[in-house]
Image 1 (cartoon, rainbow, N blue to C red):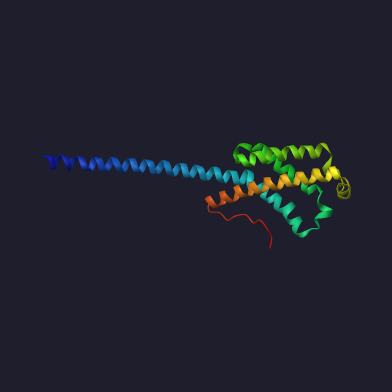
Image 2: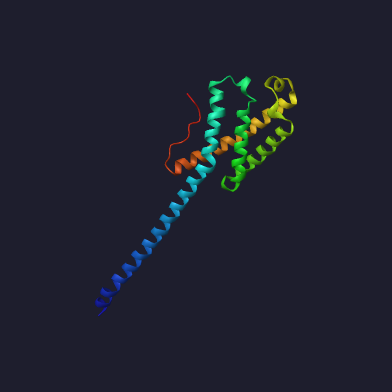
Length: 170
């Protein structure tokens, strides 16, 4: 009698166990797919546009253009404005460290506009200690922010098994 009961109950327990496992796997798969989708969205909305603008306007200029004459060019401030705009719209999607750096960057950027820094000629910038210090501070904060963002971008690429972004030209 006990054998017959076990013979009937065992398949039911096994079926229930397999059902629970399949449900857990399904919900786990959905969560992973949702996470991948969110990470891909972050790349397309935040990291990739900033990376492309930085690479095309700042990194290439630093490596292939004489930077002294070009340092205060419109390209530099276009890049900073794009970074400011993108991060302002997506502040909740970046790390706390990057948020803190962004707030500092945002203040320096607005301070530079209040002092008409984008309109100043490079030779004037090098002659005025205050404006030069203001530009250097803005640039230093931007560099820290960019390093933080590129680290996040690299981490996301690693999670999604995508190629990492190029940082330097050799």
